Image 1 (cartoon, one colour):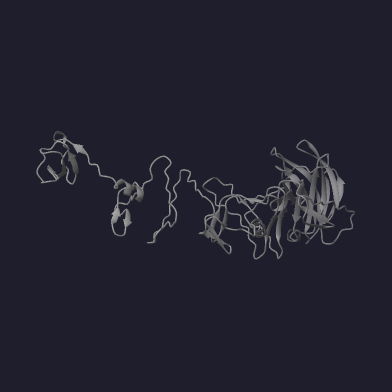
Image 2: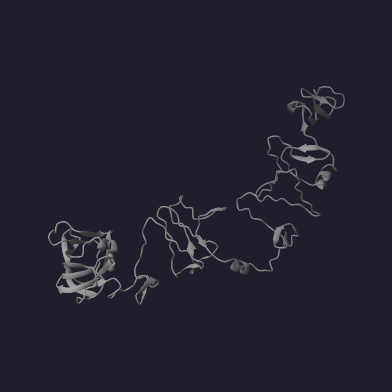
Length: 411
């Protein structure tokens, strides 16, 4: 394929029958920066001279033409099958563009000569023309495939005629499509960044999967975070452990191992056996647990005793009132003494010495006169000071107060 220079936007295009005949047009502004072609729609038609209303071959965007938008590059591809379907002859071609204002303009036109063999015409692999696109002066350079001043940028690097992945991203770049992009290799896939790394799935999920290898992120303060609305967050899923929904600050096993001192000990009611620390041991100091308004319960569904064994004293101190032992079950059993049954009412505890001291002196009973006798509730005893015949002890049988001496009713 070759382009023969002619006049202005009239360019002769010569191609060989049965070959791929591809070329690009690069548009730059007066400062040599890429001209943004977003909003422009390109087409190419090839006609026989006798009929310029029905094209013999037509290319449109998405079908033979690729508009690079803000890169300023448009690529045209006439395949070997398409060129072979045409008779070797002279044709007329036009390259058109629909501008953002919806008007259609012819950018290039001229003779399209399709030959069986390579021509001996004087040719150029890259020709330029100055055009006016929507009020802007633009230089358009036509470059044959494999020739001219093709460059690579925005994540691509050109070495000779080879363009490969690798290089500096010069703008925010998206890869859009309904298909998957797969990085498959025997080595590692690394994302190295000092800022934020965003893995974003619009409607489904982002899967980080290493088939027996390693997924590596090298960055300071790397965070995995689910930024969906509250209630819809699932975070990172582990197949056997559910989800992690909070931001993760990742670290290594080696870091954790080094952060935990190797000489961890246990004391003051705790015992260490190997790497296990458990309740049980000698209290080495007075120890308090501040409940701060909460309850502390020891709950065991088994028929096992909870015991406090001590050679000294066992103190329960209520700072604002009394300390009660109380059985709050529906069927009360209270505190059990082996030989005495159960105590089911709240207990106000005292000492053995206090009880002995109480009964070491004469017992004093309530004193009444015959006129002030209380109701004769059964099983009570009182002192009556003015009973007939003199003062006497009396007891109640539930109906009357009777003298203890002869069981006569007090009168």
